[in-house]
Image 1 (spheres, rainbow, N blue to C red):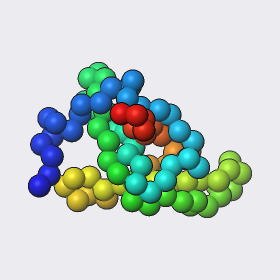
Image 2 (image 1 turned 180 degrees about the horizontal axis):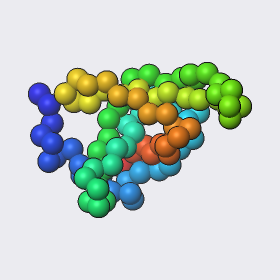
Image 3 (image 1 turned 45 degrees about the horizontal axis):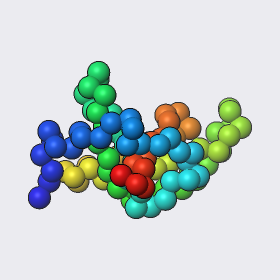
Length: 91
């Protein structure tokens, strides 16, 4: 059963750590911001991560991190464009 929307956004910035794309592993819990201004985050489990190619204009590697929401929707982030945060192991 899917988690109620209100219960998903229970983490704060103290619960998270910023990570480099190469540090993310399948199974990690990565964070997504809640409602703007709320200061709350949700986390979803990473299902795939890997090198997505080299951007010829910027001459940098690009990465793709995929996760699936509790409702079955598939999402991905490009950590070269947006910072990636994951749930700290001690949380």
